[in-house]
Image (tube, rainbow, N blue to C red):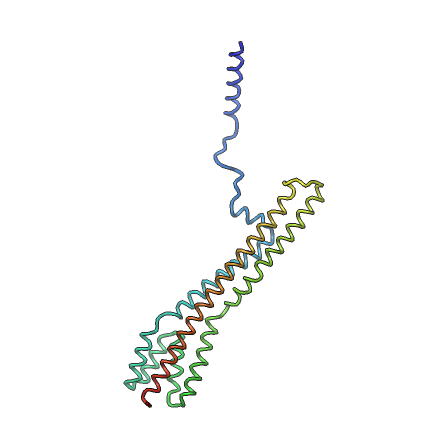
Length: 233
């Protein structure tokens, strides 16, 4: 009798289990996109800063990288043209190079016949313009690195306010009530810091690249001036 009851109960449990909804995965897993949404409206300006920073970084990175390409062939061609007296050919070579160094040398070649100080001044002025072009918008990355964590801090304050508001509204201090504000607080803080750190690193990477280009331009300009002074020695 007892065995029959146990068997009957077991069959009922099996039938009940068959009608339960099948769970194919962990439904409560929190995806990255859902986590960002839980950050609230403060995530919008942080996201805009992140996109803006990445666009500026990659645009400047490829521009500076192009300006930093090896110009030894250009210098060799200009040297050969000058030593053989083919000034117009040297000017055409610099014009066709379409590079910062080419534009600097072209300005210097157009000043040949004037005092060497005038040539140096003309090259230096063009060099400053070329460097300012390379540095365009880089300072915006520095601004993003500074204000992105501030937006994260703003989100932290908003999250704390939301926690107290939800508690006062429900008169309940359970984790379910305060979790919304905690999500806003932690997600915005983490996102703001992450964007700020990435922007800070990108800012200094670009500045180091510009410094290398400046050093190379200065070295080539000195070599060019020495080349112009050779016939007079």
